[in-house]
Length: 154
Image (cartoon, rainbow, N blue to C red; front, side, top):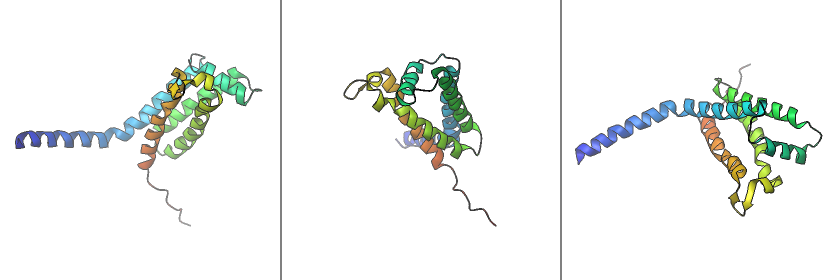
C-alpha cells in the first residue's frame, strides 16, 4: 500500500510541477488562439457569428456599416489575441478584453430571439456567448499571476 501511495505522490508532484510551469503560457496562448482565429474569420467574412454581430450592431448603432464594423471588430479581436502573447502587455490585454466581453454578452439581453430557446435554454449562439465565462476565468488566472505595479521613484 505504501508503494502505491509513493507512486501516486510522485505522479501528483510531477503533474503539479507541470501545471505550475505551463498553466500561464498555455492560458495566454489559448486566449491568443481563440481571439486571433475568431477575429480573422470576421475580417474575411467567414465567421458564423457575423449575423449575430450585425443584428446587435443594428440594434445598438444602426448608422454604422455592418461590413466595416465586422472588419474592425475582427481586427480588435486579433489585437486582443496578440496582446496576450506579448510579455508585459497582459494588463492592457485584460482591459481591452473586458471591454470586448461587455459587448459580446449584450445579445443575451438585447437579442433574446438569437440567444435563447426558452428559460435557461440557450441557442447555439447563446452557448457561444455563455462559454465566455471560461475566458473570463482564464483572464482572472493570468491577472492573479501578475506582480503589482510599483510606484515610480522621483
